[in-house]
Image (cartoon, rainbow, N blue to C red):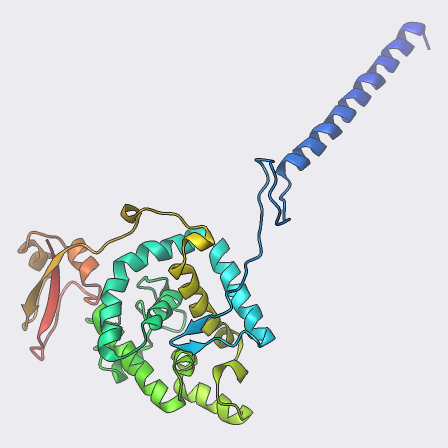
Length: 309
């Protein structure tokens, strides 16, 4: 091997070694820069992100009934729901925006019906205050099944579905909860029955020889139900405590409407809307219970339709 060739080989080895040494330094630097700091102490590294455990308030309650935090499993469930909903920041912030829009409709009805104000948080965890449909077919912000809705006075068919009518659905939910409270003995059990049904809760209480929600084994989703409501209440009642900042004008509001009463059929809702200087889309936004582009109304029932100003 010639001297010049050996020199070229040696130089190549040096270059390659230099490359790998610097590459390793770069990787370590990158790893250090992007590392998440899970310690609860504060650091001066502007690139660190601190994940903090939450302190569970000692005196949590729901509908005037104390949450039994002395039970280990209940404390863990509350902790889970506070963590999940606090660190799912985008969804929780949407809660704040939507409650400003819909709680002024819900709260007076709860008061009128004699149902504790805390039940407004049940509608939050049921639907995020959206008109959604569950895999089981529950609909609207109160997520009522067809049978429960009809039993509590709602009209439900292909043409009209009052589960999407917030005022009427809230009253129907109140009627269900009042009956459940009378049947089961507490508002906490009534809330659990809203999820699992009166018969389902009653059967488990009897089989397990217990008389309250915090002692019954009722399936994971039902066992998460009250802690989810309590967590929603705690977060929405203390936004700054959980790191949420917003101005009043960041929140959503209902538009102003006036009422038109109709006791006949409407053959074309799009045409009907134009008569009031609005359009099909806007009219359906304020009246989502109208499910088609016409209103049958063979019974000449009196309907109240909200028209945007």
